[in-house]
Length: 115
View (cartoon, rainbow, N blue to C red):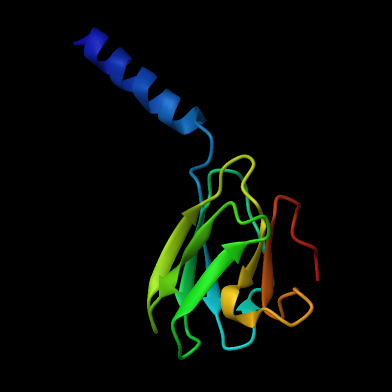
């Protein structure tokens, strides 16, 4: 019986000492913005894009390394944030004549600023 108790205690200790689980962050897709504009996260977190814009939405990374969409009205899509993922993204349909995008968002590994 002591061996079983010892094994259970060891397993419980391993779970208690494990790193914090990955977090999920929500980014609202609005008609002319992402909210929040900057999402502060850690590697391994998941970002859930929720389309509240009233039209289908396509998101593309700054370097074209990833793309999500189309996301239907009131639809959702997720992105796992791993090492090397491009953290700046755009609304594909907000491209301007000069090649820039008017609707942009960012993810950052930095600490969120205190307000």
